[in-house]
Amino acid sequence: MKSFRKELWFNIPGRRGFVNITPQVEAALHESGIREGLCLVNPMHITASVFINDDESGLHHDYEAFLEKVAPHEPVSQYWHNRTGEDNADAHIKRQLMGREVVVAVTEGRLDFGTWEQIFYGEFDGRRRKRVLVKIIGE
Amino acid sequence: MKSFRKELWFNIPGRRGFVNITPQVEAALHESGIREGLCLVNPMHITASVFINDDESGLHHDYEAFLEKVAPHEPVSQYWHNRTGEDNADAHIKRQLMGREVVVAVTEGRLDFGTWEQIFYGEFDGRRRKRVLVKIIGE
Amino acid sequence: MKSFRKELWFNIPGRRGFVNITPQVEAALHESGIREGLCLVNPMHITASVFINDDESGLHHDYEAFLEKVAPHEPVSQYWHNRTGEDNADAHIKRQLMGREVVVAVTEGRLDFGTWEQIFYGEFDGRRRKRVLVKIIGE
Image (cartoon, rainbow over all chains, first blue to last red; front, side, top):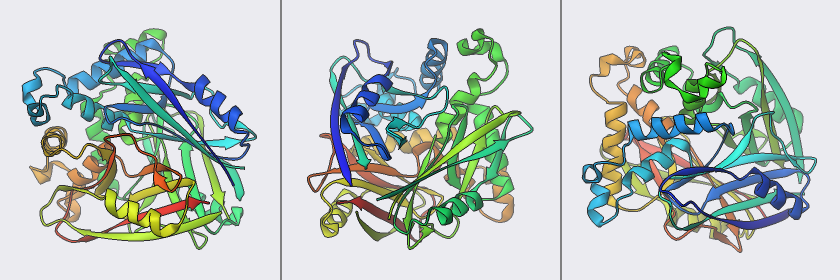
């Protein structure tokens, strides 16, 4: 069994944003030399998500609007977590709704994806450098 | 290390529906010959989920009602994604809430499940053939 | 390839609660002797979650309040699942929102975590003994 590990770094200039990280994950897979196995991709932070969906800006707007509707940022005083001096309680909730991680099958050296599957980094508390871990095991 | 891959196909006649796919996943595991490892099950589409819960029709009604309450299909014009000519933005949101994939432990040649765990395909934009990927790695 | 399996048992005295289970998962990893691989952690029940987030009691209050707002326990008669004699339909919904499982990278014999990542057992229908499965594969 082989294993491979790589960190990807992102710095989203706003509080929230979505970035298609499929090319970076594919590059990591290529670098690993693994042909059959599983690829785990997760943020190493708890106010961000890695998820798989469509690379369509209208949909990303809809995700943003949905998440703000169900877990609004303001007023920050509505959340007990923010009594610690933070203002990001909503980001911790949004990340749970979108999910932490994805596990992707690796087949014949490629991410085993349907036509429209793309991997996104979802930031809910940005404006600083944050890491995504890619861990691949297989042969 | 062994790896095994299989596609399962589904065609849900309505827009939304839940199908218990545990027997098909168990059959794939048996076919793989793998006794110890991990089994990944995910739709190869971005408006569907694979999730684990109870095979109880009342609960499935409750999931449907909950998802329609928080991310209603109508009016389709409320979603920017639907300006592309699609009408399935709600399906992309519902799939995120129910999750994309499950990873199941394989122990002694079986899905390592508690009493009530069953695997479901959750369709949110049906009426066409769609695929589920089963990828198993182990020994 | 090595594989390792362990069950952890919990009995949450109230209906709902969050428990940091990181030390138990780390102990299982140490016991496994696996240095590189993947670690799956999931409840063997369908009204509980395993998730990764912050060990901060205010945030846990916010999760509880959020989940009760979007999928309230009362009135229990609002859910068809409860016509079976159960009163835990809301718990099945809450578990989907928080997620079933986590998959964690294992690197150099440790859970490959960012600074604040901690693993939690999230109970939504407690007051009885329930199990969490830890399955680790690797080398």
